[in-house]
Amino acid sequence: MLYQGLNVNFGVYLIIANLFPCINFLQRALEEKSSKTWESMRMMGMMDSAYHFSWFIFYSLNSIFVAVIVTIVSLFIFKSSNILLLFLFYLLYGISLFGYMMIFIALFKEVKTGTPIFTILHLILYYIWWTMPDGNTSYFVRVISCFLPNLAVNNFSLVLWNLEE
Image (tube, rainbow, N blue to C red):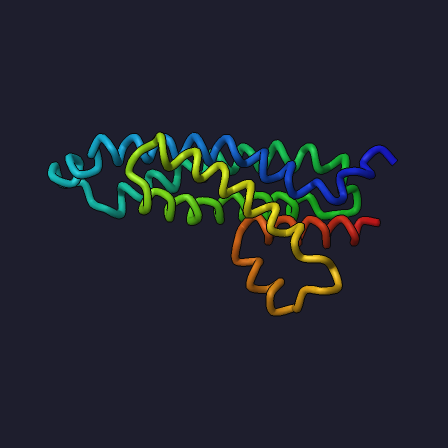
């Protein structure tokens, strides 16, 4: 089978596909934070909700683009799955990363520190999954681990892969 190696590695491909929009968003938001653009916009009368909503729209459009591309590629892999559910899965994963990145924006003030730490931690959180063997990890630990977006996407992609076979 052509896609035999994808069953274990599909989660990492999805994580890497979403890495560029995440880094792009994080760099822009941290640059804006370090230059104090938001404070000047607030002094001119911009509401906080409009500011945060504009960032959400910007990232959501990037996430929709990635979800469409990954869904088109997935049509060749997951032939028995519903296309709309696959798109929804990829889109919700991308949007869940928005909240994850907002934590980094709150913690870091400069692009030089925030972006590399996010990238490294983003990939490390995927590899935490490899420390949980199938039969030895309790159900509670697996459920709690799904609050991290990368572990959740990997667990779901493995379930989806097993259902396809």
